[in-house]
Image 1: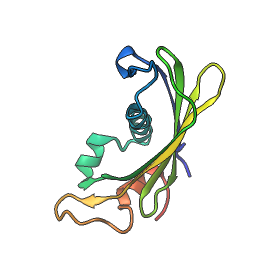
Image 2: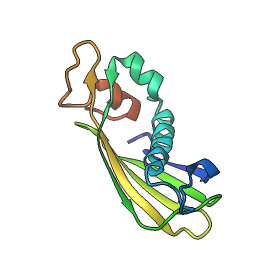
Image 3: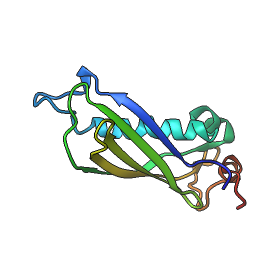
Image 4: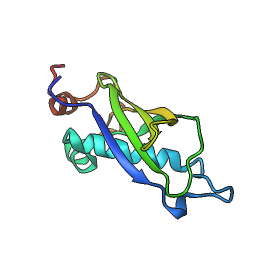
Amino acid sequence: MSVDLKVEVDLKIPFFDIDAMGVVWHGHYAKYFEIARGALMDKIGYGYLEMNKSGYFWPVVDVRIKYVKSIKLEQDIKIIAELKEYENRMKIEYLICDSETGDRLCKGHSIQVAVEQKTGEMCFQSPPILFEKLGVAE
């Protein structure tokens, strides 16, 4: 494979992500996954605008999140996203760690499938554009 299928994103937790208990509200973890997923797709040259131009939507059909430790206000975290499957769907695995200690805070994955824009039909194989962006043969 000619493209690096992994990206790391650093983030300092802002005040507006914290709940009444002083920790990150659980719903924001999916947002952190999405930030890293966007960076990963931009890295391979197939971000939102490119997806749209290619004639395919890529809706998320499944997200799994395993909470390990709470994340707190102004904590520096590292979000790692890695594309693990791409032939019939995109499966991206995520790991969120404390930037300073390396402690695992959260892990999970998301699954997306290609849908042809013109027909609204789900594709049972990823379209050729994804293989092209990844630099791999179908």
